[in-house]
Image (cartoon, rainbow, N blue to C red; front, side):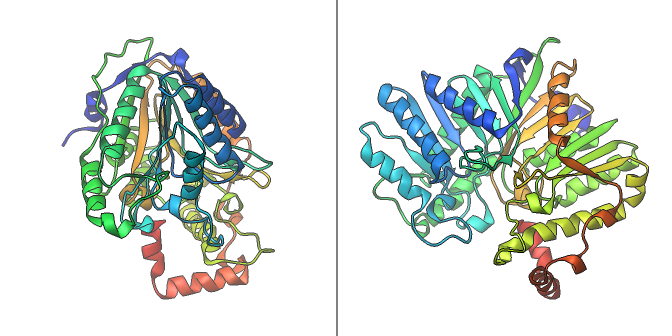
Length: 446
């Protein structure tokens, strides 16, 4: 079997100038930078996100795109969103106008139209969505786990905290654009949601299956480059489904490679079995492990006890129960400071960060939630970074400091609420789920 070391040494790489790798520290900065880049674009704009929402921030981004296109009709603009998500309202919202309706109304009002492609990763949303990330504008990649709406872009007084990186690298941008063009937009299962006529999902069932099968075999194509000591190595990786998923394998091997420290961010505490196993092995090897996870009240599905409870509001409590069990099993590691668990909570804001740092040399920037759903259902990608000469260490240390700023360190599992303290509606739901053993199924799709 190939050793972990070999896998990383055999990864094809692109050379990155560290001076052209920038970390942004807030949702506001991300929004400003994205709009600036759209306004300055001269040849291409490719935006890929789970959704572009019909709200003020979503309309602002679409307006900026349309203005850029009317000013310069030759500008290549393509937007990709999840096919299913675009054609339904928000969870718990009244049936009505969808995001797809907004794309069509914008197209109807402008001479030079912008396609918004719906990517159907699976026949039904619950079994897999487009979770691929990356906004490519000219030769720069703006990479974040964020989608495009009010809360992700901190349009009003609340934000959903994510990671944001700006990477100027033509070869990386070309590779990511070519993937979107060839593997996604070019496929018969993919349709423009801004068009007056689009097929029903059931009419394209066969094409959707073909798309998923071809995505499972796909990868980013690029001519590998030699990386000099003054540069950093970057590798874009894509993965979908459980079998032969290079991204999943890469994440496991990254964790297995750790000698000194692992720092993990995940919004929903529900590690895939293989990740949980690697974390356990790392702790046994004496590696210091830090996990940053959102407090249940900072989860995007959290419903405050003052509001009317809906089933979806049980999710944050399920994640907290997972975390409590994990902390309890690792009480000794927490006491000896080998394991640090930080809970993020800042006012009414929510937490959506993901990523892994290993030994201050290897980093993963990704939209992957490091949960079973990401592992086997959604289309995910990431950029692996190898920084052997610590060019990016100061930036990443500043990013870590920024992340930890609003966290509380868990010193014992008892700090986390137990089920008996949950609101009655949540307790009732938990009992029901456990009784029908649905929690096993839920763990796989959440």
